[in-house]
Image 1: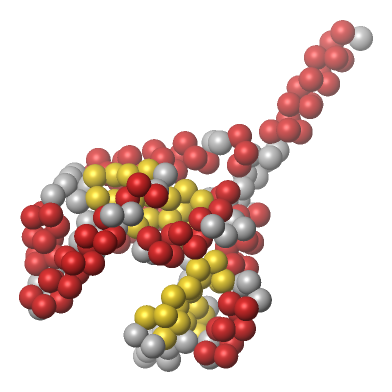
Image 2: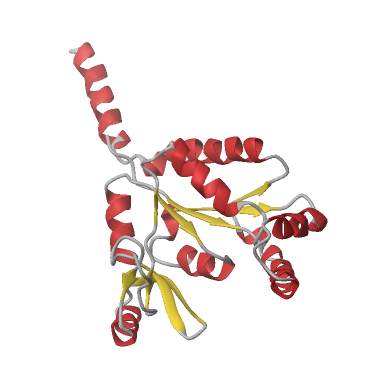
Amino acid sequence: MTRRGLLIILSSPSGAGKSTLAKRLMAWDPSIRFSVSATTRAPRPGEVDGRDYYFRTRAEFTAMIDAGEMLEHAEVFGNFYGSPKGPVENAIAEGRDTLFDIDWQGGQQVRNSTLGKDVISVFVLPPSINELESRLRGRAQDSDEVIAGRMQKSRDEISHWAEYDYVLVNDDLDQTEAALCGIIQAERQRRERQPWLNDLVRTLNAEFEARKA
């Protein structure tokens, strides 16, 4: 009675709470796993191949793209990053859910891939631009120049909100978390994600026929 796994895309502008919600979602259900990305950058101290990233040479990465083995990919600051298709396909077949923390461009690629029918996409909006900037400054991690760049990028990110299946306004973290968990619970029950139902209904109909005999 194994259902098909979900491919959960979570996107938002920086500072809207996406990373916190992703951590809370996996704490709510530890069976949900982050998609491990592939990259052409060198491993940093302590990083392990297959756990933190799949570390690949540029030639290996481009070969994966050419072979159709990447769900999505992009080049960032001279290095490729992307999501290998194989591990996600295996997880879906085994009824395990995979979480993607990616931007709208990566989301478009995944939704348009061969696994698009298994995608749930959720976009997280801030309650206001002032609150978004306040959260970025509250991190005390970035310079004014970096924050200004993130704010400018946020406008572009937000312009793609209507491409997503669900949109959550994160004005209360606990309520937004509850709404996100509710979405996952409901999507898991969709008829097309439970192929075993066909056999169950045939069995039920056979039991009806047996009663007539």
